[in-house]
Length: 142
Image (cartoon, rainbow, N blue to C red):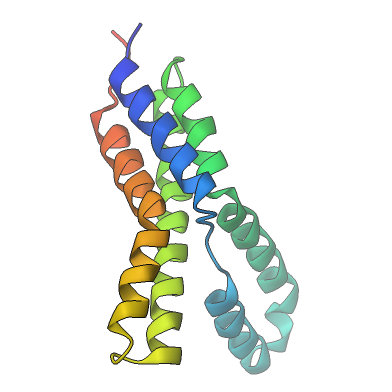
């Protein structure tokens, strides 16, 4: 059985991301697309489709990592690594956005709140790191 360690790391990482509810946010992308749509009204249809795809990818989070982990155990290692990369990346972006929103609301004076936030999201950060490391370890079947 190839990629056993990578599978386990990605599976655990995906579960941790799922438990932390680490999914990406498309709010920033929506604002950018709305700005571009105002400047180029003929692009609204294409931009709506892009936003739909981005929201689907952002919603995968830990589930996408778990799906990709199972793909590592098949001959579709490249596809599995791609899915893990997108899902873990969007989950990581989601965690960073929550952290940035916290700093924007509370400021740097809320150090205790910051520590509490990091502890509550610790499983998400650990899951993202495990998924990325597992993805890096995965290799093509022999």
